[in-house]
Image 1 (spheres, chains in turn red, yellow):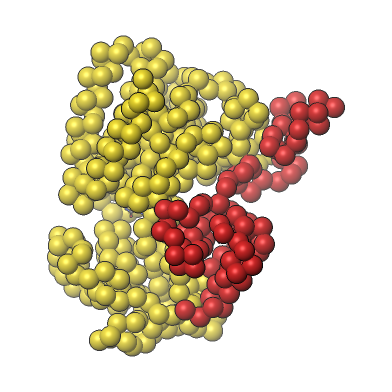
Image 2 (image 1 turned 180 degrees about the vertical axis):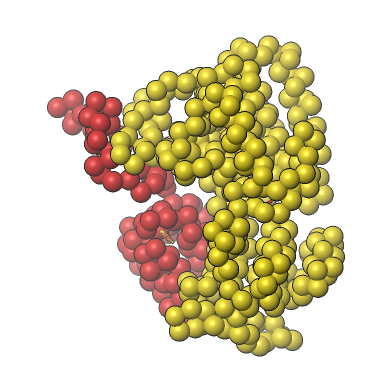
Length: 108
Length: 355
Ligand SMILES: Cc1cc2nc3c(=O)[nH]c(=O)nc-3n(C[C@H](O)[C@H](O)[C@H](O)COP(=O)(O)OP(=O)(O)OC[C@H]3O[C@@H](n4cnc5c(N)ncnc54)[C@H](O)[C@@H]3O)c2cc1C
Ligand code: FES
């Protein structure tokens, strides 16, 4: 297939860019994501997940069941930062992004 | 906000569950991202033939209306335009309504987030005029916009049959169905249905590419016999569905991979409880199935929830579940028997943990 074919249409990432990431050492979807932004668009990889996984499977020769899915982190849907902090009592950014801050940060 | 049961997703599975729970007096809320209840039923104009007896035969659109009316009259809190976007540190679900983000406390959470459509990769698939059948359904049946005049449909399945028929009824010329598999791999009954409608199916073929200046104008079909370019302005892709499970991932549920259920799938037991004992799953999020299966899985999950909340006693719940699992087996026979077998092995694998 033509390597310029777009796979992730939100971020306009094509087959060539994905294969380049794989050649550079990417093994799984999230590696490609970190290198190219593939899967980070408005649909949050709803559209491209399996197409990217198929390209990884073809490249590595692994069966599809061994190809990981991208990790979902919050917020799982497009959310304005202002909305996350809107109600300070219940939803400071700190508490919503629980995985990105340590206990010390939250208490201080 | 505090409820006994919070349901994430107001499609047929979530609505069925909400009705049954509310009828038993459970304080129930539905968190639904869009501004209407009904989920993917909202654009399904075809008549659903095999619904459970109490529903008769009706279109998806009618069933969605029936459910929404019933749900609001029975006192279920429907939080429309509300999206579950995450969880708080203590596991409480976090919901956003576009202005504010807040926690919703629940004794039990049922995730019925449905399925997403699988696109298909070929050069030109991102051109305007190339769309999934779901998009075509929405344009045609919800927005009343004709998506094109000359169409090909990728994928020979029951969903593509319905959309091909609907397109035709609206005056679109459906040039044919393009199917990768050979004729022996496709359900005979389905092939007969296409034949009776005079819709041509090209087996052993695929779309090699699509092209056009600002809109799709041509497709090339890579079939040894056909190998020809066709002038079209609409390509509908019907390439299957896969479960939407992000909320379950955030709720720390364990996953496994089962091709016949749609790929990555949460582990669950015979009451559709996940590895997080306060979280349940049903509908297409628990494995891609038919509409009857979607409704029955929701009923089973609610039975489990009612048992957990001590509204049903163990004996009643067990009896109820046995009846429902028999119904599910009946719903998932024939074309869906592989789905059912996969489900049974998933449930059996889960058993040791339940003890
Ligand atoms: C585009 C499309 C077209 C389809 N067409 C057909 C067809 O023609 N025939 C057929 O038999 N089947 C069809 N299906 C299959 C369809 O999935 C089922 O018919 C049925 O609607 C699934 O029921 P459900 O309740 O499991 O999920 P859904 O009906 O998908 O409902 C899930 C609901 O959850 C909501 N939701 C998701 N995530 C969140 C969140 N984080 N927070 C809040 N709400 C959320 C969604 O907005 C949605 O309303 C189609 C599926 C899709 C995706
Ligand atoms: S298509 Fe890749 S993020 Fe949307």
